[in-house]
Length: 414
Ligand SMILES: *Cc1c(COP(=O)(O)O)cnc(C)c1O
Image (cartoon, rainbow, N blue to C red; front, side):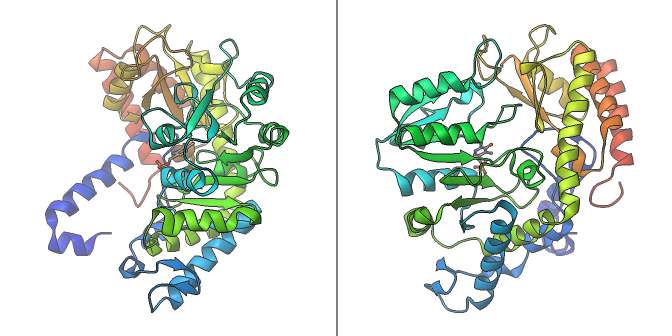
């Protein structure tokens, strides 16, 4: 790795090497992160970064695109096969611009859209007031039930019938339970709204049959490619044929210039990996691991929002632990467990120091860990949370973490 950077720019190469060692020696438990294969890394670092290919395969504005066409068509064909989509655009730079392209392509500014509130598990691009989407469109937000902390489909349907939005967005960034896509699509149909599912977090689980799919019900589906799908940092947009031309025009020339062909090549590689039978086992293991981790944390007296998980993600409510989300994040960091502080539904505290932390199992599962390791991780984590202000406790947890990391190496031995 990195031989050329090391030769010509030792400063940058040192920084990258430190980041590699950091990744090798922490339990990375941020649920939106993952560890890509060396094949995906190679494709991302390939000569396709040199190419300009504005336009779409066989309809480009620049010459020399015979291989860029091939790699883009291959990524599209594999994505269609993975998800059963009618049309796929693989040019979006990342999840947020993919979502903006959907609104820009299918709505007029000011149109009414319903999306899940960020504070209850939705994403910034589902209409948060500080986000472009919240400023450009008239978003009405829905959330979770205060008692169950889960989506209440009857209540949302009532809101939909009352508001009659032009589009309904579903999908989440901090929701530990199954999303009933079929029900959302039925609500949208009742008011003639466009149905839009953002499966950024759970795409890999859907591919593995570990979460129900929004296909064939939904009009439009976006996903990042770097979360549970375990590909490069990017996104794709999938839609019914009747929206294909509007979506393609919104991406280019509506929002973007040249696509990142090196990332497209890496997406093709990642989709090839996800098409293999082993990926189904992988995706299902992510969920088994999350459940095992949740059971251990619960046994340690730590409360999970909604009481458990159906997917890759757990939201921990720290209110009974005498520690805030920010303090827990810092303590776990010292013990080499990486998580993020997160609001819990109806959080009495502020987003910068909320009452919860969010964790997930995709990265640990990519390292090969299974249920028995999750038990250990849960014990280590609980010890760090309870001993958050005791350096000796955090040091003991760190040594257990380093032990586990050594047993499950990534990108070569330590
Ligand atoms: C991560 C995420 C995104 C945004 O992806 P970026 O690549 O970070 O822009 C969009 N929607 C949801 C639900 C996400 O979880």
